[in-house]
Amino acid sequence: MSLSRADVERIAHLARLQIDDESIPDYARNLSNILELVEQMSAVDTSQVTPMAHPLDTVQRLREDVVTEDNQREHFQQHAPSVENGLYLVPKVIE
Amino acid sequence: MEWETVIGLEIHAQLQTRSKIFSGAATAYGAAPNTQACAVDLGLPGVLPVLNKEAVRMAAKFGLAIGATVAHRSIFARKNYFYPDLPKGYQISQYELPIVAGGKVQIELEDGTHKTIGVTRAHLEEDAGKSLHEDFHGMTGIDLNRAGTPLLEIVSEPDMRSAQEAVAYMKKIHSLVRYLEICDGNMQEGSFRCDANVSVRPKGQREFGTRAELKNINSFRFVEKAINIEVERQIDILESGGKVVQETRLYDADNNQTRAMRSKEEAMDYRYFPDPDLLPVALDDAFLNTVRASLPELPDAKRRRFIETFAVSEYDAGILTSSRELADYFERTLDAGGSAKLAANWIITELSGALNRAGLELGASPVTPQQLGGMIKRIDDNTISGKIAKQVFEAMWGGAGDADEIIENQGLRQVTDSGAIEVLIDEIIAANPQQVEQYRAGKEKVFGFFVGQVMKASKGKANPQQLNDLLRKKLQ
Image (cartoon, rainbow over all chains, first blue to last red):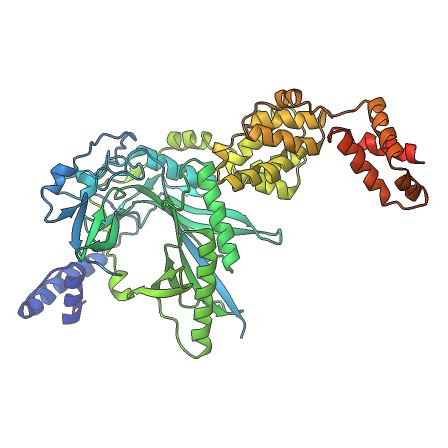
């Protein structure tokens, strides 16, 4: 499978990545190579193999339902570019 | 052309855990902004999610209650999209292998018929934060207290064929999650939310039409209105030769219309993949058996039992079991030993009416079930009449004590002594010779006048049946 210029632009947009126009053909070629590798792997018969969700062969440990975190808002908000009335401020989003 | 509506619902129920699904921050509603958002909820670098056992238990409980398969192995996935109230840039959800698959619930329609609605799946995920679009100097304010609150997303099959069916299904799930004590069901606070997938097709056609997804319709009434208006819109488009576009639409309650929210091609590519931060969740039979043993009696079973054990009507049983609180109130009322039929009537009409007028929830009722039961017992044993009972009820509501105290203190005991009633009747007959003549001349209506007069003379306390019988005799 070969990715077009438009595919690359779309993927970059979805990932919020800004890429130079002239590097698009490189991205297209490299990403297409990855997809080709996946296609090659698809040729292997895996009908008897359980799909792997995680490389570690173990299961999730569960936490007891207990509140363990204190309010550290002041601490966290020191790193935020803009706050007001306890809220984080971000550029206006309108739907 | 005749059109058929096809509806599937996605319900988001906030699970009532104390802490978040992947962090130890509190989930209490209404805290000051960002005071319950810890490093995990903020998506700071280097943090790892740790799954809340209680959220898993609640999801399993729901699955078992609807006869679904609760997966021995389920996995979490990342759903990728950018929005400021989703700090990580992805929502942890489940995609392949959700925790619950393939259940069903029965709904009852207005004409009394039943219909089975399939539940495709229910999966665990985290809620996002809240965006406040009021003016912050042209900026948007973000409160991440809600971020990471556990949600159970319950996805139905496209089995509903009208807005009414969709509402009946939503009410059923709402009642169920509250019976199970896994969600408080508070729609104002957003604990229970619903999106509807709506499409229409020519009646008889097998394939589904193109659907629109209606977002965040947060009351039973709006679900019905939003679906109806959307169906109308789609039929208009199709009948004028157009095509329905697959898109997300928002219901605008003020103008009763739906409008396009965001274009599909950009928003819908979520690029799901298994979350490497979380291992597969394994539930063994011992865990599931413990959860199964903790299931309460569910609404349908309770309803059947009420009909069979207490001989209340199907209609009354339906109302009484519509919430667990109401059903419990009814059963506690019966503990006092009074008649079930009377208890059902009093709860459904007088008590519910009084609560409505006062704007109170059942839990805040000034009249306890023990008090109501005590009063009903006094109706049963003829100490008071049904009419006087209303007076007693009002006094109990006002905090005047138990029924027996009120009856004693206010002298409301019913007069069942025939001699005493006869004395009153004789007085009234003597004072109204004209009416006696009219009655004896065949004017049956005058009988009511005598009943009223005697009842009044007894201050409403004469036993109505005895009064009638004795009066009939005396007037002959």
